[in-house]
Length: 275
Image (cartoon, rainbow, N blue to C red; front, side):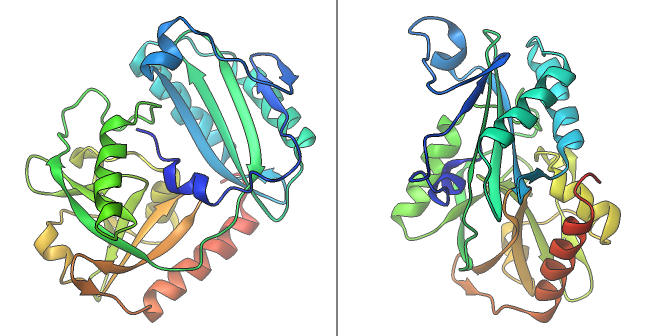
């Protein structure tokens, strides 16, 4: 699923003309085909990650997930060395500091597009609400990072009309899955938890790293249970850990456990850019 809607709001599009990697070279303009199923049907995969002083975070993990998504979608994947060359080239042509967003897009028609743009961190906590539509755990796109985005976009627009920033999806079993833009974590007073992959959530890179290195565990959660937790946040490679200040009518203060986890993870990332 796509996850660039709010991230795009934090991108500095007023920087100098962006250089783009297209297939096997740097170009200054990207022309999209008027025919072909890839772009027109949203048939493709992508990865989006943060750069720190123009150094990509967890590139190998993102490439491995891109390869898995491409395999599941039966899309031809270029050699990973070619993608790495494109990443190095587009970063060199578009140096940004302190933070940037690197996006690798692979379309079913064979086009590979890589961009690198400045990214501004958000300071405010997020307001979350529950989606009215069910996200089935058995859907073909479950766990895949695809450029198809219509359902998420519709749910997000409806939530934003009601004054929320992001929307929480629930599966057919009534379990929390993820938000339209990120994975989700919560603190119950003792442990940090996140939905399991069986829920249908994306296998987020930041999610995995929090499980592997920071004691976050997998657990089931319902919307009614989420209202009772002590702290709530979303996680993504571009945004790291962003606190939720509100879920439905429940307000959350910025807690010590959340501050500690967010600060510890940020410091860990700076020392482990290729975990």
